[in-house]
Image (tube, rainbow, N blue to C red):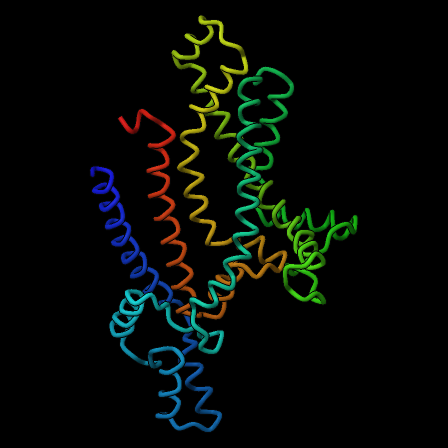
Length: 329
């Protein structure tokens, strides 16, 4: 019963947070310079429509008229959210925002989730080794690699990998998620092309994220090494592998929350990586929405990120109590 009450409170707080963020993003994007709705309205008039006809056309396409008061647009936007309607895109000629986001989401999930899991697993293992062997050459090399990779921006890493493997050595394809001459479907030529085109963006994300996981895990393991149970395990004569397993289990706990939040932020896409490799994911979609001042699409993308982060945070809270019995007590 207590778990259900706690879950209900978290869900209620999450709903309030979604409305707060939706309100903030609504006014933020509409205070940006430029008004694409008014531009469309003027374009329709230039093509022969009367002001009344142009206004009706714009209202049908976007749900509001060019010079409608901001508070009326806000009430309409909140009403749409409550009915799970994100509105219609301005830059995609009135296509529902939800359809556009759902079409772009799988590409981001393939790219970011694969890179996130790879960097997390490798970073955790490297962090444990770097902490336990911190006085050796291996530990120093791992720490140095983590520090260097953590300091390289994603766009620099992407450009470097693209230059090395598509220009210096023409080994991998560059640009687009698959070969344009292939027909998408569950067949080997398309899947193999999809995998080859995904290698560089996934590697860019994984290498850019690896350093953070490795350094955080190393710091956490070093902290755990000073706990009393480590001394007790040594006194009891436990094998080294058993001690390492207990150390890693306790040290990895704080990283679960960070991992869950990273999964939530995954739906924001990886802007620079998707832009460099021409990947049609949510990050590229968000860049397009910002550059074209597409209010509904921007608001929908920000709302998706907010909901994903809140859900992942709630999930992390309950997952933490599962993996750590001390939290349950």
